[in-house]
Length: 265
Image 1: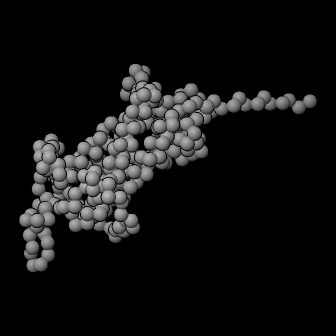
Image 2: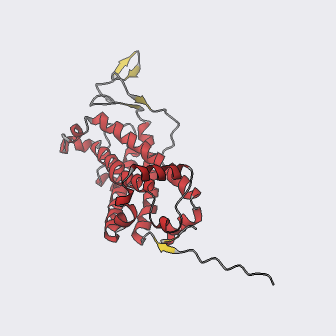
Image 3: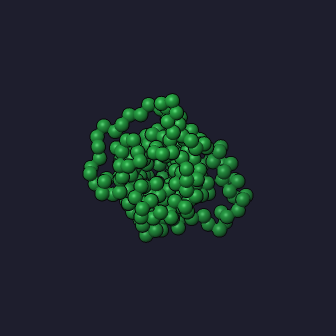
């Protein structure tokens, strides 16, 4: 008589993502893509990056030598220029009300689009923060516990992450230590710094808050920091998407659509 193998117990599912978190997550994904797309177009208007308060001056700061424009200030980095395709449709006139200025730039449409999406991203991000605080998401899912605060635990999680060994069972109820530190750094350091430096670059900030640029060491330093933060965000997105696929694409996508996450076995 053939022995019957016992059926494997069903996978345990936990409700990981609330409705507000899921909605704001997908909206953020769209807004960030739009910001990267339009922001890179703005960078193409003047590719060199500087430190301090000098550079990118399309007025008296650019000299005409033998009929060609030359920027007299040395740059710390020159972003490669690529062919640019403008957005086909202009965004609503609300963008002008939200603070878009059409001065100091050669193509105001790109700046208007970029700042419009920046305001939407800010408002949506505030909703995400409020929902995360109200639901305890940051406390239960992202905040490292006391036992996590050790170099040995960090090194072990980092090495497991590199080898693509993901948490299973009860350990998968919360993010691993690398995920926690990465998400907390992006949410509370990189993105706020990028938003502050981005709004500091608005022309009306020179009149309304002229001291603001000095906090970051000058207008051009703000621009360089803003660009550096965008590279960090872009790198985070690429790694994040890769981890979503490698750690269980269907399970991760389903959890961000329905909220329910099945603990891997």
